[in-house]
Amino acid sequence: MNRNNKTNSIEKMRRLKSAAQRAARTCGFEMTEKKHNSKIDGSDFEIENAKKTAEQSERECPSFSAGVKKEISEQKIKRKADAHALLSAFTLSIGALKLMPAKRCWGVHYVLESEAALSLVSKLAAQYFGLESQLNRVKHERLNAEYCELLLHGNAIGDFLTATGLVNYNAEGEKSYEPHVPRKAIETEMQRRAFIRGLFLACGSVSEPKKAYHCELVFKNVELAMFSKRMISDFGIRIKCTERKGYIVLYIKESETLSDFLALAGASDAVMVLNEQRIVRQLNNTVNRGVNCINANIEKATRTAMKQAEDIRLVLSVVGAENLPPPLRIVAEARLNNFEMPLSELAEEIGIGRSAANYRLRKLCEMAEDIRTEMPD
Image (cartoon, rainbow, N blue to C red; front, side, top):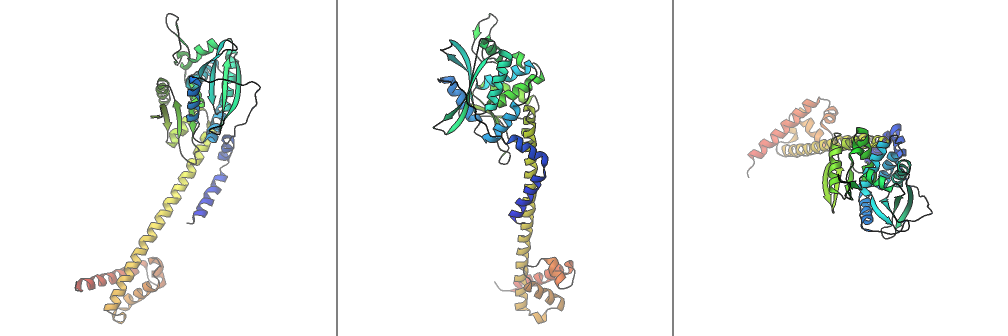
């Protein structure tokens, strides 16, 4: 089968899948640029770590990842508890405390490529905590890349830090800056689902399904990574863990598991694209297996025909065509004159059945073997 014909037929099938086309349009977003009047200045150790995490999490096919994050970010969150869960996961993953000398207060700083995700966090922080925000797009000259920065601040920043888990209080009421997952943020299944959405928005990425099935969450905090792994596993999703350059990486490589995870995160359109691509891959594999099978059969038939021709020439050189019985002579001449012809066509050419042609060719091959046996070494 011609490779171009195979490719064209598969592309035609893909165009016929209207549902997948709608999903592709939804998930094929390009990030839009917004201009802001204010600008965030300064950098510290926590911010650098957040930048590294953002670069790690977005390195795989940013356009598709951005589309998935945009889809998740556009979903409405109606319950305050679910909003707190998402904000907690997002903040614990990539949030960093930032001192604002001009305002003499603390803020929470985020760095990420997905402007849609940061816009959602800004909206929820304003809605449920009354926080102000500054959202800016920054260009990294050395890496020739763009990312976004979000800074949250306001009178209720203390409540926000406590609710998201960046600040903790012990039994004596003493404040601790050790990040932890607040129990109130994950009490219900809906909250846990929102928490997982926040994890993916903050430190997740997913590859273009045409290239590979791969999704990962990148953490700089080991405890948060292991906690997240257990939570995701509780939903029946098998997610693996590895270490890369000082970061803990949770990853999924199986297509069905990836589909389940994206559905859990709320990316239903992305699931449609993934499943459509999985069908195309299966069709590709089926066609390739068929082509390989045909090629193998052709190769086998060619080797058999070559052996038959060699045996026939030997028999003719020793016995002579005139001394062969007519049925054997006819099939011998037909094989030598139609070397490339399959056995069924060869039989049709001389007007006999396939089994009869095969029997006569075997008799000629046996004669050749007898001749070789009697020939001196």
